[in-house]
Length: 268
Ligand SMILES: O=P(O)(O)OC[C@H]1O[C@@H](O)[C@@H](O)[C@@H](O)[C@@H]1O
Image (cartoon, rainbow, N blue to C red; front, side, top):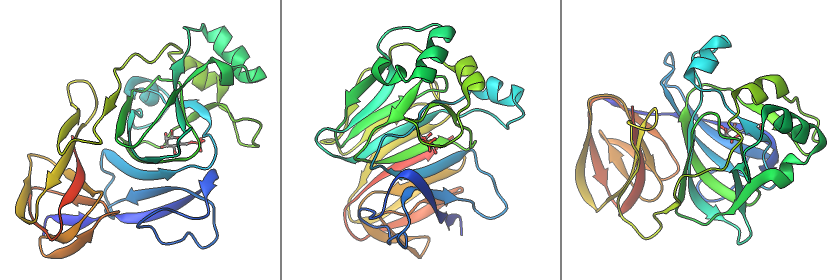
């Protein structure tokens, strides 16, 4: 058996939702913002997959890169990427600032709230994909459901939180920020069956979007592979899988697809 279903962990957030979309059971009245796919037991793999559901803006925040993380006693840094599953018509994502800011300007704007106006809030729609390298000042907006694939280091430096009573991390946040416009070209793959979304040459992991027709397939790679089915169901190495789960595949696995499936596949 080389395929392991990862445990789900529901995380409460002040910007989360009481009713989760699609395949996730209710959070028992809790305000859930994230579903993490943890483990497997006894392992700390290099990638963490999350679903994120928003009803308000997340904090305006930044993550350190590997060197900055290690210098702060962490195992590394955190770059992340977002695949948008659903977005309300006016939903936005804050990525980068509208103009380059100095460290002092970023600190002052974070303290007095002007950072909200200085963020570049870009409209978002299903099928959009964004890579957020460490150092990018960012904030996911309200009304968005997305899959996040990130380096497995739980570190967020909050610069601004709209007055919510949560801790801020201004010193570390300003130190690791590159407050500048986000220049990566927009990518939307809503109409595509397959797409190479992210490559190891520019990020700490590879990510592809794949479509599997009904039938038998094999997932094989030289290292671990995260199988993140967005639609469909079937079996993997004989165990039932369905959309909304995440499986870690070591080596080769036999994938039986019972209904046409769209999936994200991440490798390191
Ligand atoms: O600090 P808050 O607002 O709770 O946001 C924290 C969340 O931010 C997102 O951009 C991602 O980096 C998530 O992995 C992280 O958990």
